[in-house]
Image (tube, rainbow, N blue to C red):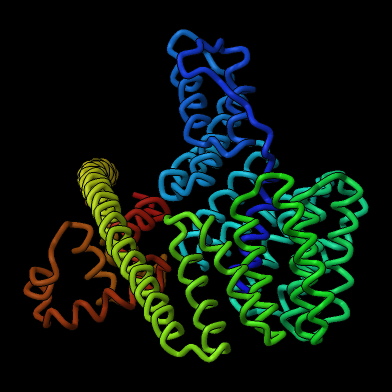
Length: 509
């Protein structure tokens, strides 16, 4: 009962229920200039289906270009009216589109709040918490006091429903601190109401009574009749917990008079039922039954949850009056309606799950197709990258190899030319009285055998040929050549021969 009472209070305060009767001819032509104003008026008096039709007509007008800011505002208003008409799922795409297309923090915060509310009303509190938090964080660091306070209050309400009372109170304190900078008295009324209810749940009845009184006084000052009625009703619940039944009944009567004044049928039904429950606490079942009859008479047959509550009140009153038969009949009716509610919820849950499944299935198919295309593109890119890398590597290897071969060939050609010149030079010097190997020995300090080997090297003889001519082994030739290179300070045959050719001193003829 307590949750129902405060959810009802919140909805009435939030929408600012106004019973001003506005009649609009069905076939009246509405210009683009005043269509939005008319739609806003329809939304204000809870004619949300008609408001949605007008908002969409403006958005779909092919003969007029709509500025982006105006479009975002209309997207949000369409979602808001769909939400207030109970079409929560239909409202979500409009809020999401507004969130996606607007860069303005205030509008994005409003759309995030609306989206969070649709999830809260459909029982998806985790998602609701996420979007409420996003909306709050978006304006937390700004000077937008109103949206900061509203966001904090939304967070407090959802945390309270999730039974995270300490965190809820923290957000309420934030909202309370922001009240001096808020001009919208309805937002302030919401903050007072939520703060009071948190105190009431924690058993701090004095603090709860204080904030309910703040709500009532604020509503009186601003002529906010529905807020005043809610204040009386909620204050009465605190008094009942304190066993002050007569005072609670007086406040509920005041609330009923206001509901009658503004023509609020639902409020009148709730007030009659609330008064009946007070009489039950006062052990006056006869009076309670009379008031329950009045509540039943004006209760719409579509308000199944309220009808179930009325039969439960009948059960308590008839049980108290000593009429077990009547009490049992109403209890059975109460259970029957509860089962219908549960069946409807189950059916709605199944339908929602099927809808979500189909939506998620399509989204998954689109995602898989996108991933497949992306994978294909990545594979093609990788193939071309590998081919390009291989081609470049081949070219680089070819160029490097060609350059190395060219340099090597040039060196070989140069060494061959120098060797030929040396051999020619040696042949010209062959007529000297002193043998060439003796000249090497005198000039470079080589032994006779080393000089002979160096001479034969200069003649172009391989190691095996030298060994054959000198009647020694090839290893001995290699040993002497190693010593020759050390004494001449050279690294190979060509350097040794060039050194001897350039520096050899020939004897006089």
